[in-house]
Length: 393
Ligand SMILES: Cc1cc2nc3c(=O)[nH]c(=O)nc-3n(C[C@H](O)[C@H](O)[C@H](O)COP(=O)(O)OP(=O)(O)OC[C@H]3O[C@@H](n4cnc5c(N)ncnc54)[C@H](O)[C@@H]3O)c2cc1C
Image (cartoon, rainbow, N blue to C red; front, top):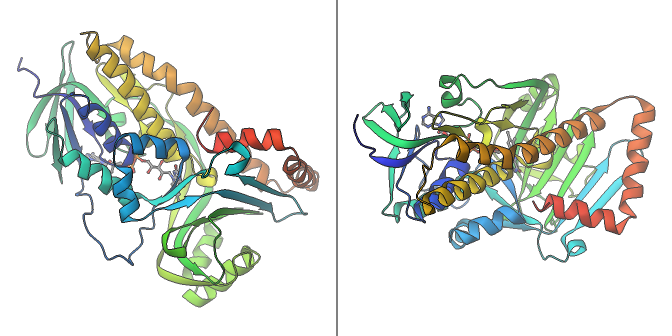
């Protein structure tokens, strides 16, 4: 048996895997971070990533604690102070303001590649972290003492293997960890647009009959849209000319932000609910989208993944401090217990909201619309919702 080359190997250097790598390597754990791609290093200032995340205040604080927030601010982010939600049916509307919870911001909207670039910049400066890019994990085998990992380029041996390799996780498949879920029969169209009216640092969300339309405030006064709809309507919207698409968007958003100009391409992602009930096996553990993909209607997927990373880092570092095995079943199960309830509650809430807002029975629509307006008049409940949306329990 060869000795370990690193203590931890993380496969997947997206937002979640790279955050875990920072949290561990910063505290002296030796880490190998492996990604099939080469994270983008440069792009023109007026080029906007279509993959954007509304990060909660709790996630922003985590990134600040890692010392990468200054880099993100310099590369571009947009703080978010309010959330305005309204229904296509009736007059139901809800305004949540960070001031309701005594905070300046609810969080920030950041293009995914900016967050990833800032995290990788930090990782390059950490002696304890080896970065393997443009290579893939081919296979692995674990025993009582460690995990042998076969990459395309070389072989490494570690004490703990972490799968942060996204919704189509190869580590999950190779570990025979089951995933469950269902297809929403919806697609999310994403695009970057320039509105004729200011976004007011507000995340706008209108619940349409076919799914929610989110207009997130982006840097430079722009808007990042996530328009969830049926595959047939998505196909039609994608086939429209830029001008016709923007006209449809103005109508769908009731011109709350005026008219729009499209910047760059549009893309569509199929929407699924997917989760695993088992998070670990012998010396192997999963985090982020590898164990849960949820509907983007409240923008929580990456935020949940960052909490997974934080929680796993905590239990691993505790074990390291006590001189114990960092990959024992006891340690991995502690992480699983800490995260499972939170992940399942959020998945349940998102699924219930999705169903509530696409229900077409008139009675449900009436209750929903008046419930929203009633909620708008209850400051204490609004404060609780606001804190939940900020990522606090
Ligand atoms: C339309 C849309 C809008 C969204 N909006 C929000 C939002 O506002 N807020 C929010 O919190 N979340 C949002 N999400 C969810 C969020 O994007 C994901 O939850 C998040 O990106 C997951 O991060 P991850 O690091 O777990 O996985 P990923 O970002 O998928 O990263 C996985 C990484 O693993 C690498 N990889 C994969 N396989 C291998 C392999 N075999 N070997 C080596 N490397 C590998 C990939 O190259 C990639 O870098 C949205 C999702 C969608 C679809």
